[in-house]
Amino acid sequence: MKILVINTGSSSIKYQLIDMESKEVLSKGLLERIGLPNPVLNHKLNDGKTHVIQARIEDHEEGMKLILDTLLDEKLGAIKSISDIDAVGHRVVHAGEKYASSVRITSDVINALEECSELAPLHNPPNLMGISAAQKLLPDVPHVAVFDTAFHQAMPPKAYLYAIPMSLYDKYGIRRYGFHGTSHRYVARRAGEMLGKHWQDLKIVTCHLGNGASMAAIDRGKSVDTSMGFTPLEGLYMGTRCGNIDPAIVIFLEEKENLTPQQVYDLLNKKSGMLGASGVSSDMRDIEDHSANGDKRARTSLEMYAYQIKRYIGSYVAAMNGIDVLVFTAGIGENSPLIRKMVCENMDYLGIEIDESKNEVRGKERVISPDSSEVKVMVIPTNEELVIAEDTEKIVKEGIDELPIV
Ligand code: ADP
View 1 (cartoon, protein in one colour):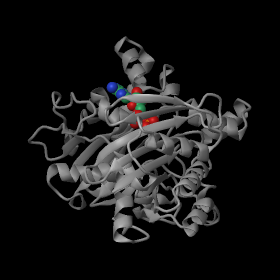
View 2 (spheres, rainbow, N blue to C red):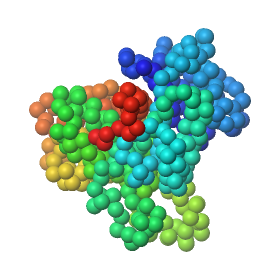
View 3 (cartoon, rainbow, N blue to C red):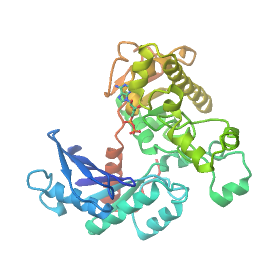
View 4 (tube, rainbow, N blue to C red):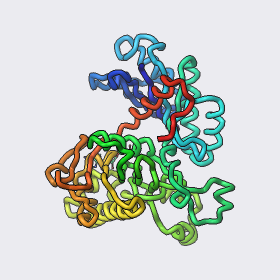
């Protein structure tokens, strides 16, 4: 079975065509600048070569058509006929409280996702545009939605509710939803496989540290807590997002800096986090470089970053009454031995330690704790596209509408 995985943003479409028998990525790419001047498609075949294609692309439907035409192209393509695509898996950000697992897309699902758009105004509308375009061009195959929020629907009310008047939860659905669920689920399951254990027997803390970053407490297969909240702004501080701050700062800034709510929102989403704290960049590589060259603010921002991860580990160990595995994933988690070392320093009280030579790894699966360590610390590259393809395959093969909740 060949599955096309689609991740649509407001002006972009990311795709992978995966052969499920061999788990091989036959082709992948990214179309950017849809509806803007100079759209560009970077298309890769499994020989690793990238082909740059430029065309006028006014909307997502034209974008999807260009992607399908490229996949079918005699020279650049990966398939001979459109009927070689057996199903399409779509990444969708927000399913509110409606779905706790992946679903076959029907008109009811579309309606439910439209209702959730208010909770994710930047993400769900483009996701829906992607679904509509793909359904128009591939009308005869099943389409499946895999949600960022679904895995965290297992959280109990004590973890997901905010202590604000409950009428606001009832009226607007203000609660913690959590994101990156597909990634947390993948690395937790993979950790179990690598250790020769079932993940549903383990207490796992997962750290997804990319431009966006979040952590999850996964107690025997269920997400029981996560750091992102009502929106992705809560929790760890990230490339440009502030993470947890005292909410009174918002009002203070509005008054003192004479800012509108939208301006404060932009400041906290786009100018804060590593960019704001380091004054250097939102990119961890730049901050590590500056810190190594003696920039004190960059050094402090690294310390802040590692310290907040430590705090979350401590609270999640308390929440689960233990920890068997700590996983690092995503751009920083997979590639920064320095951050992993800073996080795991002075954690021996919790049984967490790393072996410095094993920690010298980038972008590869590895256990980085000493062999004798009871808590396994692991680096596991995430693979959200593979999870989307696997969920899609399961729903199609088993002829079901919704995956059972893990
Ligand atoms: P996104 O959330 O956009 O998918 P990624 O998972 O690609 O983000 O992570 C991007 C982050 O990973 C950036 O902060 C980048 O600096 C960091 N990163 C990538 N490679 C390295 C590296 N070798 N060392 C340190 N940080 C890295």
